[in-house]
Image (cartoon, rainbow, N blue to C red; front, side, top):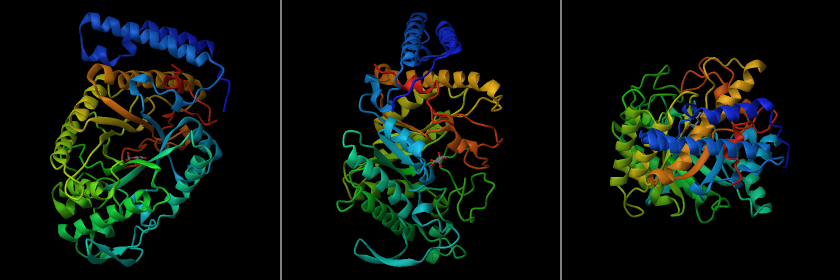
Length: 461
Ligand code: GLA
């Protein structure tokens, strides 16, 4: 797909102005080391980067993002999130297959979807065997996920040199998991089960899902590169484990939750998290990477809580069938226009990599600035702010290896085109768009065309 990108005179001017005002685009090394010399060197580096970016934007061909992974991040996957409906949109499919070598399904591998969205009541039970014992388990429904996988499988078969790999998202999460899963006989009005019973359900669920998609007999076994084992287990407010008393609009016994945790309610500890990584290690092929994933991951209090948890997961590492395994920390990267700073992203990545060895940006998007109203008049300026913001992040991420030896092994954007972003939708829980403000957080616009921010990542050398 080759298209012409028309660079406007305004944008050239803005690019030059940006290059001249180093204070606007703080680079990671400059924030890490305050010495004047280093800051000056960093400023020169950024000016060069802006010039390089201008050259790329001037090109008449649109490079594919997946072919533009910088040497500093060699081998890193470049992914995007798509949902079931979006994958049916030919414009999204074209963007996915042209620009990305990895994909995360927005909802279709989450527990609520795999239980067929039967959130109000269990869809029925069947007998299954776990460690030689017969247990009664809820019926699973893989249809939506498989439909998406089949489409990508077919694409991969026809394009062996342009394979798209899949991130499994997510096995254990307080949200989008039916409440009945935690109760006796899978009936929401009955008591919560005890941790021993829940451990069996947890192990069965992880075993069944992982074997179905990555086991030796699975059609899809070569498609997955990794799986988010646990999502968002640390509280924003306490910086400790997310509990059943987490501040929330909804009741704990609602069908699913946005904030509070029935996992915690059953266990009262992090046992379910450690066990989830233990079971994932037991049933995943060795080649499948295993992750912990969280948001607000650059906030100091929350970061410290996540670090403590990662340390415990690491301390429990051991052989398959006995211990845990963790490959990387997923930094979701749902950022704002004005925060976190480059320095916060850098020190967070360093702290996580120090414990688990690598980080990935897993849900990257940037919320519009407070004053943005969606009008045509504001659009160009907002796009330029977005470009500069992504530029700062790009240089932070690409400098990490050199500055502090941190491996960034993947960047996934949470969406493709702006109009499908989750941020467009009003949501009172989970950090959605509480003000119904128009958003433009991604790299492609409503015409499926690359925006200026795209060229931050689409540098050809
Ligand atoms: C979180 C989850 C994702 C998704 C986004 C919002 O970050 O990890 O699965 O639900 O929120 O779309």
